[in-house]
Length: 350
Image (cartoon, rainbow, N blue to C red; front, side, top):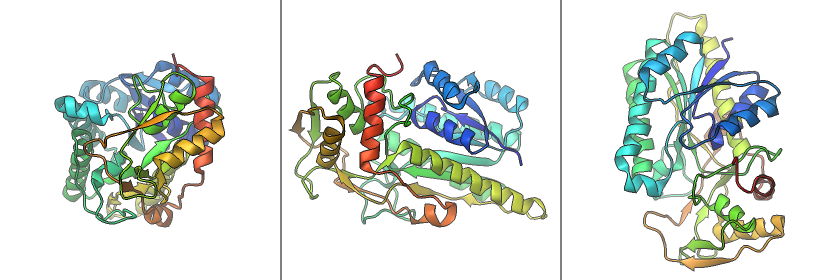
């Protein structure tokens, strides 16, 4: 079994946790990251946690020659592709940057993968591709539409992967559509480390709790939900990491089953949701975090943000059926692990 995996964006939040899960599952990992939104310290900490140096290459996915050097030097089974910019607000202000990095970068990566006949890919997609859902829970055949350039860039890549699978039956492409990743490694050594003011709810709450930020703004308290605040499907990042291992295992099983036959069957384009299937409101999350951290979390209500939706949670049946995967950790676990990371690392990796 070829078990060497290239992890693009492997120094980022979800990437670091996935590298540890891959190592524990017996995969050999090579991380490729330009460190534009991550830290070399994160790589050092992965190495400490797994007890051996991790193979790290500083490089950009838009750099085809650099990628060729990497593929020439390693025999990869496949790629887990996290490398991408992810701030919705920034994407609205700088759409060309997002399309260049997230879409053009992925095209470059796929071209180099094709040159080296590495045709197994797990792609970091997003529940953002569903836009404002018509029905809940959201399953993989729900209509897709996006309200911002970040979401459009993820959807554009999905369309590219679909077209690629139609054009060449030897590709196996699994976009994992994440819902709302939160939490941190139980060691407290790695976690979410936003460069600036956090864009996401959980790191904002934890930075208020630790005293870095003064107050949480809750955007909208007049949604048609249980308490008027937005409802989201929060998933622990270590559960999410296990979802990537399960997707790779699925690709490995498929590769071994076809190796003895003449037919080049593959999984083609196979989108899968990763979520808990449960919705939690903003106020419920604040209450859970307050209980765990024993810190006051002052908040104020603000107007709804453009593009925000009332409720969004997954149907995770397909992941369970095909990958044998389901989320195991609770909202309390997510808050405890986030608080451990934040209180041990009040300034993140700095």
